[in-house]
Image 1 (cartoon, rainbow, N blue to C red):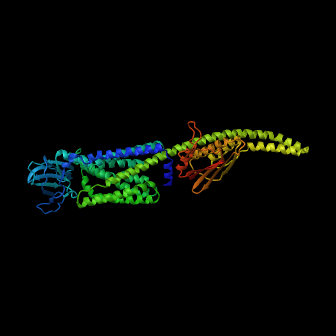
Image 2: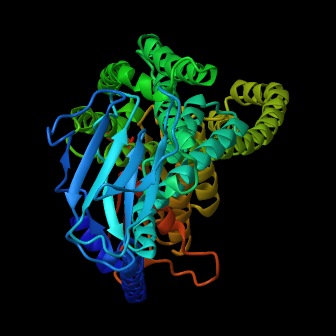
Length: 592
């Protein structure tokens, strides 16, 4: 918190005003969109819709008993609600519908062969003008035991108000379907892009296919879809997509597992084999899809088995499973609640698990996107590191050539030097021999190469610092004891080179009569890598809004300290500066 408060104080006033303006604009846009889409959710034309779903009596002759498969259930109630040009909307779920008003037929589905799937449909049934206080009867017949005796929503209003209700009631699911479909296609596209970068991640392709299937299934229980497909295709799409969505989901988990992949294989076979067999049986006309819903417990068992394995993977530090586990568990519990309502016939299932699976897709997509860009930037860093290694290797090669030439020259001159020394010693001219030997030692020292650190970047920059400081007459002291170092090569190079450049520049401004020095230390204080550089300077500093700024005014300058701060923050560390009139000390601590 203190760090955020300090950062806020250091932020320029113009930046704060700009951020406040952005927040204000964002709030206005959010408020407008909320009002705008509120009209879609509650359109004024739907205000005349009356919900008749409650208050019905059912059974035959008032027995209030639920029928068996193939038997007809009769719903009846007296219409006490008044509206002009009234139309009744009945939603049938694998049922045929017949509607009567005081015994007079108003609507009847076309007869179908016994046992054939009647599908899922919406029925708009006009009422006569004198319907008030008369008894409305609805007969529902289904060839399937699961759907016999099951009631659906019944609404009354004008055609326009009912159509507005259908659209508004489905709008949220249509928007989420579009988002889910977009996320699925985006995930598939990212998978191909990762493959182009040399990273094969088939689990992302599986979750992308799952998102596409789930997007299409998302709206299959909404009113608006009934307007576009025939009753049979509504049934086939809804149940076919429901049976199929778990196949790519379990495949995603199987491909993402690291420890329990072999244990996950039975779930993959179950969830892939079941929809394949179901669709094949439907096409061949052996068994309709609604009858196979009785085997839904097999799929639910396979899903709880999957959740258990996902929990074990998450326990063993599989980060992807750690993110996915809460959403998958909540979705499963929501599915159990929905099916408890469905099987006991107490109300209409809310299908709340759809939203949880949507959040699961959103979570996995966010994780995959982060992984994709992490891989992309890691590749860029590796390329930069290779380029840096190549550049340093080229410099080392040139220095090595020069070094070998100097060694060759020294070797060639060594015989002459030994002869000269022998002459001095033979003649008893010991002082001159000592001076001559000191000169030879200095030449040899200038030729001999030193190793300052095992890390090639630190070694190269330390050698470059000594060379440049020697040319400027600056005393240099190195204490490079931390090893090994795992900071990324480009970051380490940028950090050290900026620290060294700033120190050399500060020392070069001092007259040669002053004590000019640089002391560079690289040490470790777990878990931090500490890079400290103390140097002499002229005591002149430039502040701007409480932040140290460069004295250089030319374009392209002044980014040294900014770069150092950025890199230390990137590694969860901090930068500290301490100075008096004679010594400036910069300390960078990086979590390494």
